Image (cartoon, rainbow, N blue to C red; front, top):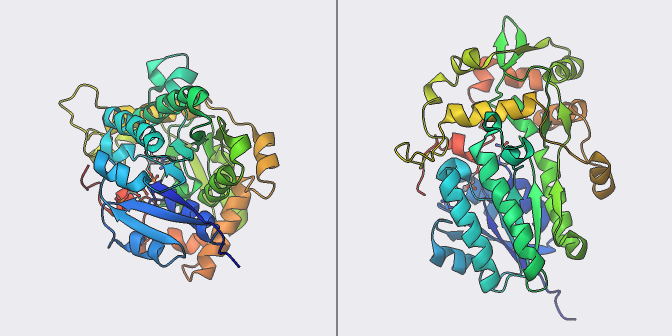
Length: 364
Ligand SMILES: NC(=O)c1ccc[n+]([C@@H]2O[C@H](COP(=O)([O-])OP(=O)(O)OC[C@H]3O[C@@H](n4cnc5c(N)ncnc54)[C@H](OP(=O)(O)O)[C@@H]3O)[C@@H](O)[C@H]2O)c1
């Protein structure tokens, strides 16, 4: 009996928060093999991935044409998430475009681009909403869809548009990290009555696998995902319901927010290898001010009926996500969500983002 032909998918960003569940979803049943680009194949996350079936690594940076060529060569598919928090907006756009071009040249058959909403355009080009790490991806997402009109037979392409991970609202060192204030779990963020279309990382795995499994339908598609639009008063209420412990959302003005735990980072470049002397570079503060304005004014939409069709068992509410996270934490011996948020435990919780685990350092 001949052995089945396994498609190999080149992955950029595979050791990251988003990449790990996507790789799991691709290789768990061994239908696909993945070649994961990483700057360090000996890191904790890279080694954990190498324990999975059908995973190999390629060491190097996406900011290197020779590495990109070596990565794409011999692969049928690609999932590309270029880390804008490394590069900054301008450099991200360049390497994302080059990735698409080199993938075609190297004979890749299906290209999935890890995208975020082009919020500046969605706002009607109002700079109040400018968010470098969103617009840097969103512009390229549209550019790829345009190229795909001419190239779709040679290399199919799909856009996978995600959003802020739900996990970030329960993890240290993120823009929405909660604090424990007199025994009350507290989110102090400048969201007003707005809502964040949070994404469940686990479901990102399902969706990206779906795109590779349904290439004919997915070719040219922009799959925009989220759990639901989460108001933070509802997040606090759901936390109380699931854990039985008090929680609150305190709407915070932008000045107070930037005077809080993110104060030290506010004037740093949003991308740790971007140069503040380059006037295109946004600071952390400018970037995440736009980010919060986007959610406060509900600039981003989702088609939840489409998501229900594509992933009927998707996580559909913040309540459901919290319940699941509570169970997963207990099964892993981390305790309940309430235990995990206690300062002595929260301090030792591994950040969901690799960039935070690495202390916002690393080569371009
Ligand atoms: N935070 C969110 O809620 C969110 C949501 C959606 C999208 N995003 C976007 O996702 C991107 C970051 O991915 P993530 O969220 O998974 O963050 P993450 O956990 O910090 O992971 C960053 C990933 O990028 C890789 N990387 C960084 N620089 C690289 C380079 N020069 N060459 C090759 N690989 C490099 C890292 O690999 P190694 O360290 O192993 O080299 C790692 O896999 C950003 O562009 C961000 O805007 C973030």
